[in-house]
Image 1 (cartoon, one colour):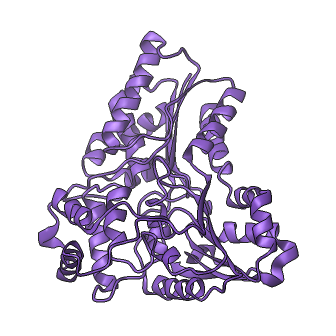
Image 2 (spheres, one colour; image 1 turned 90 degrees about the vertical axis):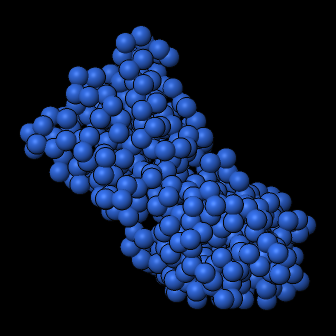
Amino acid sequence: MSAKREHALAIWQAAVAAAEPGQLVRAALADSALQSTLLLARRIIVVGAGKAGAAMSAGVESALADRLDHIEGIVNVPAEAVRPLQRIRLHSARSGASNQPTSEGIVGARQILQLVRGAGADDVVLCLLSGGGSALLPAPVQGVSLEDKQELTWLLHACGATINEMNCVRKHLSDVKGGQLAQGFHGSALVSLIISDVIGDPLDVIASGPTAPDPTTFADALAVLDKFGLKARTPPSILRYLAAGAGREAAETPKTPPSNVHNCIIGNNARSLRAAQSKAEELGYRVVNLGSFLEGETRHVATALAGIVRSILKDQLPCGAPACILSGGETTVTLTADHGLGGRNQEFVLAALTYLGPQEMHGVTLLSGGTDGEDGPTDAAGALADEATHKEAVRLGLSPVKFLARNDAYHFFSATGDLLKTGLTHTNVMDVRVLLVA
């Protein structure tokens, strides 16, 4: 691996390390006010869902080691993250790279609902939420099947719907999302510790906001389907339920938070970008940190950021080399009818590589990776490419343009040896992109 590749990877890994769930949870539970609340609790009920759920749960047990006898709970996590803990049961809610809800997830969600709704007056609930929580905490409303929700989730994903749009719909097809988990709580206090995987950290969108008031409505959910022309392809049971809700025949999600419910963001993309910036500066780079709000079609974002690379190469603007361009957020990919395999991070690198071409890639290194270690339905977190990638593609007779046209970045980078494979990181704060210009 070249020195610049090692630098790009080290910068990205610094971002992931800053979102380590156990460390974030322990810091949050060190708060004196929260410690006082927990000290008075008869029971500390721990629930939640997300890709960081296992590490967050372990962090709770570590931070509250002297109160373990008072703790019980269940947290829905990916099958790959399940391991035995002392007092908190990690429940397998899905397996593999699929981000679809499962019947196993429903079982766990119903048990979580039962625990929260059964809390006594002196009980405190700690709710651990992180990226992937929407899919890992499914509780379909009566009359809507899991299969119908899975089909609609796939349709929205394939159309390039944003996470906000997807969650607006999912909240109105659930018994737990959109503040409905907190709605049934009658204990002393419910405190949600949240690692955000959403642009801007909106409480109602992260994991579809099971403990946050929901500003969206049934009418908004129907508008999302209209925007993408999906009504004709949406399962009839879902259309009937959303229409009933819009006609006030089904209860809306809660719009006002209960006074005993508190939501706390303990980790996010901005924090991780700051850590990446510190690492890049330590390695001697001038840093342009574009922040956590980048969204939109992946290849368009890639073109814009590659344009900044060109500006640095030609005009030393906004700074001269050696430069590091950092960005976060989360883009979307609209799939072609004849699409291949990949994810938004792999497609970003392929689109930027295609835009820059072999000459301009001299001295340039591109990395884009999902901080959860997953990128779309693949076993890669993203991709890492430089001038050598172009040379290898030429040697193999591969056309980056053709692979990009059919959304097949995975097979392109698999052939060139440039996939970024990290395994699950057990956290999730969206994507981090690192572009180095030597």
